[in-house]
Image 1 (cartoon, rainbow, N blue to C red):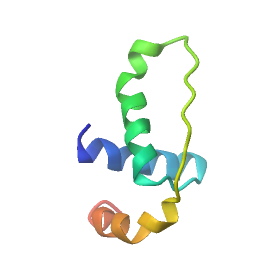
Image 2 (spheres, rainbow, N blue to C red):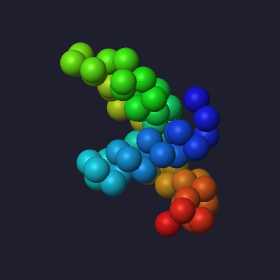
Image 3 (tube, helix red, strand yellow):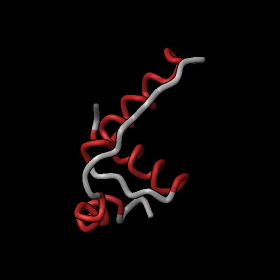
Length: 67
């Protein structure tokens, strides 16, 4: 998983669902996004754990050039 994929997944969930994920589940979401084409027609369950608010400062530094 690349850092860019994780940041993209972090933004995807934040923008589409209004949920700020912790970085750990953002890695899992990035994998799901990457592998979505192999799971067409299947149900995928992804558990979000942790507190994304603790990562906001770090993510603002990462995202400053993207926003």
